[in-house]
Image 1 (cartoon, one colour):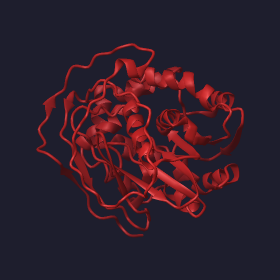
Image 2 (cartoon, rainbow, N blue to C red):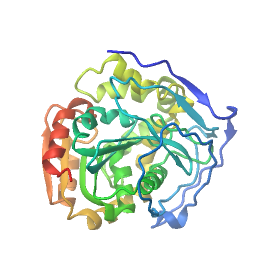
Image 3 (cartoon, rainbow, N blue to C red):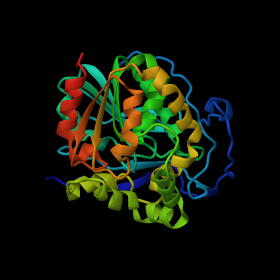
Image 4 (tube, rainbow, N blue to C red):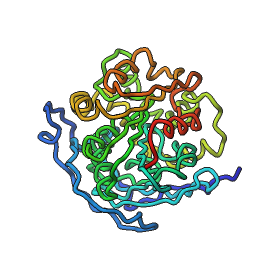
Length: 365
């Protein structure tokens, strides 16, 4: 197996840390009423033109107050890493979002499937599923800002779920995606469903695994968020790459190869590159308004849509006994595919089963 090229962080500006504005908490039933958008200018670079598509205007997704997990704001950063063509045999494409350049892949023809990743992963997580489906479906996967090959935005971007949703909403509209299936796992569930709500008329199928979409409602979720947000563990996440080096191996049944692990490490090579990873655990408790909107609106918007639930049944993060019943109630028109030996990162453990389940549940055109 070939080894990917060496990686380095390519700063887009002089790397001077600036104190962040103090964080404040606000309460509102509508995020769009309590939050304002922060516009940033980014260096424009086109390496591969996206497929031409009709564009439409997205609904405005909320943009939360800015803060940095370590209390600082950073200049923009670009990750200089070339994935292995053997492991990631896809053409990289780029979209200039309002907050910076984001990376995505757009493979195959047919009915679109839009894949949303979680933490600390990126579109690489879906490589084996996309490779199996792109002969029948159009497979799209975005890297959120600060993840994968996307830029790390300049100060003002806080790496919250609502902001990732806003970027994904903008990207979706630029491609004019219609008649789409949305697939999400981990934080890809909340980000994917938020994006789907903003393009509800374009979503005709939903598939999810080992994820959630409502405010934290269990002591284990609050405890995990509190622990991972504590100073010592935040330091481990930022300085020692805890999520990649410890949680990915713990969350997969099979042993990932050195080359596969390098593809997760290489896109988060420094502490400054991991601020988005460090923020997601805080979001479990802090994204209450965003998750509350999903809990309120998703059942009405998508409750009658065909759905697929694929679940790693050895996942301690989202045990099926506690989480799966709510998914089944929300989507009565669902099919369930059990993955009895899979852990949290089901795309690494059972890509063939998941791809087959998608093809069996949803027509390709």
